[in-house]
Length: 310
Ligand code: NCD
Image 1 (cartoon, rainbow, N blue to C red):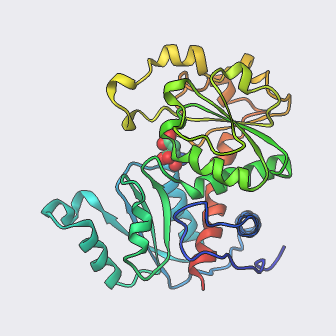
Image 2 (image 1 turned 30 degrees about the vertical axis):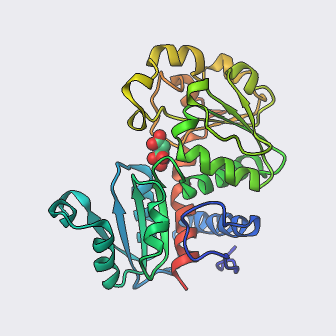
């Protein structure tokens, strides 16, 4: 593929997975594949030349923030970072006033991670540029779901018809929420696996829930493990790490219950010895965890390109 694939998506912001159609998802994944090849060939078209992207993160981030920044820089954009710790939020300014001032500087897009539920949709209603959600509260993390879908398609050649297990802290995971929404939209069957106290309140239609890993992993093509989101729980609800690993840790023995060619994924950061054993995380045949992480760059390039280079 030598020129950028054509096609537009039907949304102007990316705050949630739900407004994306399956066609939108395919356009994003195809464009991400184009950018992945362009990165390898060192001939990335500078489609965001002259654009300035504002990043606004109120929660810790390594992969999401750095891969968004790398994606923007690779496309020729420049970045401006709003740093909460040294901002006027510390002087009592409301978040809405801050955003109205920042909007007045006319950024070409805002990439934001915020601890408050639905903050990106609130910001999208205040500003004149596209807003891209880099994770809000335990609600949504749409670009993580897109890079997970990209990685599954890359490794398995398709998404439709596959069975994907998601194991762990489903109650507090924005990754799980967005993955379930996106992967079911693309025709996958989902097995959710968690102890009862970490299960989501609502189980989406067609999704199967299991409280033992042994039952849930049988026949799966993809196994996604998740970190326990201790920062979103009362101390009393935090499971003991050793007991958790004993009951829900992804070990080689348990992985053997999935299909022999099942791939292992994790959005990161991994807590080795808690939700995943070292030898599973580093399994040369089945673990695609670092490939998944690297795919964050071309997938976020595709999202930025589709929303900002217009
Ligand atoms: C996830 C997040 O922040 O939601 N990490 C990520 O973006 N790659 C998952 C987590 O923090 O456990």
